[in-house]
Length: 573
Image 1 (cartoon, rainbow, N blue to C red):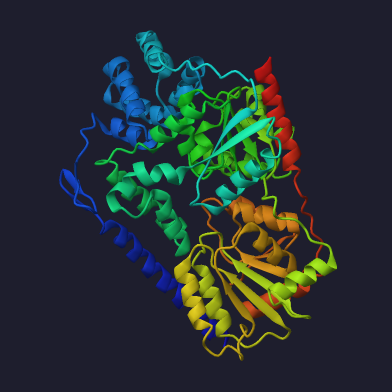
Image 2: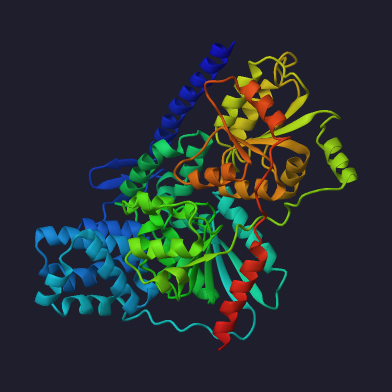
């Protein structure tokens, strides 16, 4: 039986991989690329964009604002390019791409950021400056001649542009938590939510080419079919190919909308990519609110280069864990210590990034993890009994919530099939499979419920779709265990409700830090593929009754309120 269960699990994963390749093919079938032109899903023809060079093309792709890309490339071609040989050109252009999104942080800081990036790229900056003393300053002057935007006067609530995306559950959840909390103080704060998908649906080359998908929609497909880590490079290549024919104006459109709002502050929850750093060209104070317990790979190059007076990184916790990958990037893994206190950690970060300690200390602030206000621990027995009745959880039965994020990662189907092939549990268990927005998965599993499951581990089972936060809170309060992946918002929710999690999947690209946090707090158990799944579930249910939980509910509301009041006070001076 053990071999049979393992075989079924393996075959299901293999089938999911085949399906995912087909999905990427299906995306590409919606348009045609031939030589110097692209034909989109409607038959509209786009000729290849005549970029001046590969740097010009990469700037356009990265900045998602053609005018910004043209201005930066023009300044480079006018003041820098004539001074470079082929070897130094490669190093200089590598540095420009590393910091091109930081142009709006001020003339002096932009110069420092580029200077630092040039050193890191191996460019002979000192020697070059002696030969061409004016070129560098002329380049920076050219970039900043139109970037002096005065901050609006504070004559009412602090106006905040809150950028997020409806394509990623965790990022949206954090943004909604922040907005719901700030809306309680209308005399102090006015937060406007901006959904990246709203702009991408009009300006994203992927959407223009396919008529169906945006770049984040494709990422969502990778999640649904459990192939994020393997196929993100393929997705990125697809997007870059399309941007050779259709200019990406998404950032330009968002910036235009933010300019209309004229906010005092921008807060972004899109911490899984570097795109929102393009908003720095607006010269508006900016906060990146992290939705995971590790710094995004695509943002690591900004550490030690941003202006901490205008740009700050808001962290979910004060743990060195957040910077583990940064130490690795700088080849300083032996320097990393999980037990370091905050002051020691800041000193080490200043050392490895060659930055002043005060700047590093000012760049990073611990806010905690904003959790939707709907998530609350329910202690009243009568209320719990009501919800058990509502969700048909019988007396003596233990509930297990199976959920893999808002997009319903495809491994849910693997878990269902494995349990469906297993004998009944030795004590009463009811499973709640939450498929999120993955309607295809919900339809499949609902159909399989018509089969005879009486003699399987799924004799008591419910298939659910997308759930509102209040409903999910009800289930999490009455269940004994959650089978899931360590997404940022999910990690924060189980921490608040002290609900143990059985980890059966992880997206290493962004969830490794969340997993480590849950394990440290005694809130997580890892799946062993060499042992039967039903047996592991029963062992965990028995173990959690005797295992202390070390998790603490972070006081994010108090910290966020304090930081925003400080910012508001500084504007009033």
